[in-house]
Image (cartoon, rainbow, N blue to C red; front, side, top):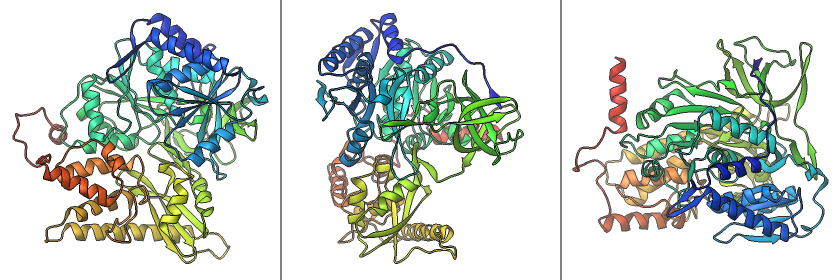
Length: 616
């Protein structure tokens, strides 16, 4: 067992924000481009919107969907909903309409706030009236969706006390204060948005929001340096992309804390991060959405141990048990399933208008504990820290987003002419990618991808699809998972050989050929010219995460610089080739291999070499 002392009662989050607005009234709460919003102005804007919501008929416990993108308007709207007594449902405006409607219907949202310069309020059918019976608890703070094993996303009902408990702990544990400037880089679709946006504000820090909706990997580092960022939250695979995009970036001094979460954190990444951000304290956070944000943390040493880092110890009021298949506690060092007993977990899943608990009672000695079975495998280390070593089911993480393979498979199987499908996660250049083996009558990848794009967020769409006449089966009638995995591996190997052969060709390659190779590396699909070419990068299997890698690779390969948003405007291979040739022809290219400018601070390669030399 891993145990920490429990803390006292927690308050609702809106009370904590109100207190921060009073304490830091004239300090800048939010900064985005030339816009600066003080804590007083934040409170005024939120109270105005809360008044409009109440005037529209919002009653305590009503569900309010907030639709938008990362912005000050979304933060104001969240605060306003809580001030008005409502429950927040965050919806990214870029999600497919089908998925947005599914979320609205599943949560029975009464109102929709469309965020913008002036946020608009829309009442949904049946919205004005008594809130649903399940939403009468004043501790209900938000509804957040995560991937579901039953083929549909799961709606988790978050707790004010649980959220406030974590936020207060993070602010106090890491001394977040009015001198801090935190980068706000998180998509609004996930519950971690509350951590990334609200922890800095409760401490009186300034939350710095990029004005660009789509920020390239190299631009992120410029943003951190140019805005004197002292703290941020990031997923390991995204941090990898940031560092890879700027191979010889100058050291960036001043970033004091970087909170990593969502995926296993490797010591090699920490070392490379410290090369770029000297003096930065890397913190590894761990905890499933069901237990309310992170429940474990580790201050990673500046010289980390090799391999995957532990997740450290529990925050106050939480504990975990590592249990075997008989729910007996495993001795230290023995791997079992991790069960978490949180101080204030979520309220459970919202299913057809009622809350269903995912929690179980476990008996340890004479004590009974209310725990969440995480599905994660782990063990207790000699120092009492918790180490996570994998999963016991079909859940994976892509770019820090929790994905149930069964949900993806269910949507694939619902597509026209599809008879069956197998979905798995495989290593890609930007972390794990999804791959599918599909049995489809008259296979047509564009038809299938159009269906998937209308039902799934980008990271849930398989990057590579292999069509087969029939899925292989075992003698017992079950899918032959090994043969299916081998099919995926064979296709990946075939694509790698093809790309290598093209790269080593002695003949001078054209811009389309070079760009095709980059597409193939990132999405596992040979983006061939002609009639077989996918219509867009996203139809080829790209996501909002992999397009960041595409942007970085294009800039490096062709020696050009341009904003990431241009790739969202030019999504076909042909259009991107034209953009590249245009930039090169206008003389906007830079010679990435030569630097005739004044000497710079040590780049990452030189820093790594120096660190290795010190170890000899």
